[in-house]
Each structure stands twice: as structure tokens, then as C-alpha cells.
Length: 202
Image (cartoon, rainbow, N blue to C red; front, side, top):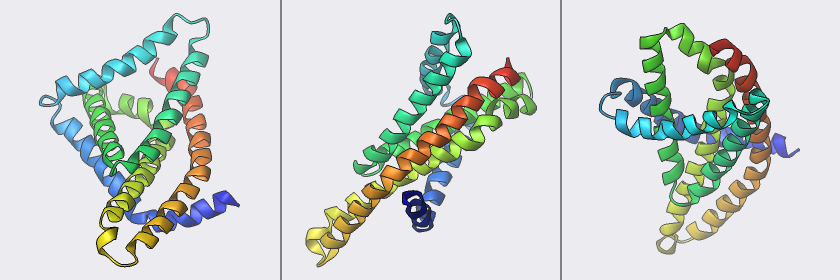
């Protein structure tokens, strides 16, 4: 029932989904075209991912540990992206830009050293689920930020405060089934990344 309400709410989210996807694509293009200009910043971000990968290398079952770490990391961060959108949507927008830049930078570098087919094998199997999940999470974060921004002006507009409270309550209610949907989607993505993607690029 709650999932049905969430999917119905998705129809009201079109502009936020489009905005979130556009920001992510812009970051991706920046990562490809500005790889030299932003290389230092992106390399710094990649160190965290490298540390995540290195922690599982010496484990007895690295694929299982990789699955657990990827899943927990993605779920925790996705929920943070949603709720920290309350701070005027700054965090989810920043996350979309940075993640897009990282993906564009890595894809460009791997395509130069290997091939675009190698890039596709490393991204598409799990990315086809993981990337939309992150975009959806950030879109809801942006929505919360936009509602808060409207709330700032509510003392000056009659009736706006009541509408803002209603929107905020409704959006928070939607984040509960959203958390369940994101968890399931990222569980599948982590399973694919730690098995299929791991095997394809090994």
C-alpha cells in the first residue's frame, strides 16, 4: 500500500527527477571534459573509494565483504542524501555533481587506457540500478530543500505556511517507503557489483 502511494507520488516528482538527473549529467560532463582541471579534487574523492576496496582485499571472502561494504555504504549515504536535503538541498545537489564528476573522470580515464567496452562492463551491470537509486534519493532531498526554502518566505505570504507544513509532512511520510525501495534496489545493485561486475573487470 505504501509503495503504491510512493509510486503515485513519483508522478509529482517529475521536475525534481529531471533536475537531479540534469545535475548528475552536468557533473559527468565536467568529469570528462575537465579531467585535467579537476583531477586533483577528483583523485582526492577517489581515495575514499580505494580505501573501501583495499579493506576487503585481505579478507577470507573478499566478494562477500565487498558486497556488505558496498551495500551499507550506499544505503547509509542515500538516506543521508534524502534527509540532509532539509538544509536547502545543498548536499544532494553537491553529491550529484561530485558523483557525476567521479564517474565521468573514471570512465574517460578507463576508456583511454582500455576501451569504452571495458567501461561499460565496469559500470552498467550495477549502475543501471544504483545510479537511478541515487538520483531518486537526491531528488527527494532537493524537494525537501525546496519546501524549506518556501517556508522561509511563509511569514510574508498568507496561507503559505500551512501549505508548506502539509508538503513537508507528506514528503516525510513518503521517505519511509522510499527508504525501503532504495534499500531493496541497492541490495540488488551491491550483489551485482560484488559478483557480476567483479568478475567482468577482474
